Image 1 (cartoon, rainbow, N blue to C red):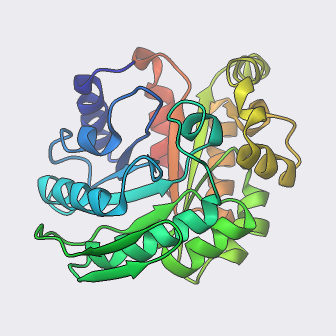
Image 2 (image 1 turned 30 degrees about the vertical axis):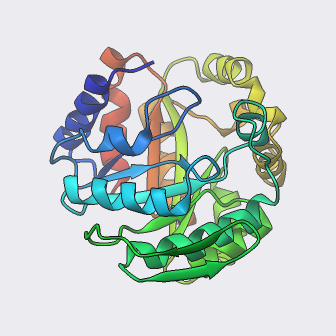
Length: 280
């Protein structure tokens, strides 16, 4: 598990390469993603959560925390949210994982006006709220982890875009983009390795991330893209091969490419250099 200082160092490293953003995920038992981002200082230009979990945090509390962090990072936050997975929410936390798309819709119907400083009076299936926040900061953009049809409808109606993973460029252009609003952000997390042994990297990912196959949302999006498992979603190969593939994501409609380097920290220079080139 990375230390907070490691996250801060990663943010400074990304900024030193001229990259646009750094993102923090919310892992079971890990650091709180929003709190960690508040410690990243003044670089890079954008910090984001990919993603913070909705079920364990009431939308009023999430809004207050997000605006607090937004103030601490001088308006550079993008709030990525998602319902996570049943084995985490129910299996680990004991919270019923009922109707995740409906839950996310209600969550955003409460959250977004609170972020804008509005008084919210709301009565739904999951939330009954009457609140207004005293915290003032610019409302951050909100993305949600939407890949299935119902979640993409929620993203289209109530969010600024989606955060997806375990996809290939064709899935982005043929499935995600057509179901989002015009101008929506399409953030895609892509594991990347610059390596002479791409097959070995894919086999290692297939083995180490085998649990991905057991998560319905991930299983469904991989099947839509014709992928047999997480190893097929990896971008791996020489610098030129990786660069060409990252540009295919851009051409498919990805607006925010969230690169997850598959390398020891001291050996990630080649991945970061290719990431810089992929922006052009």
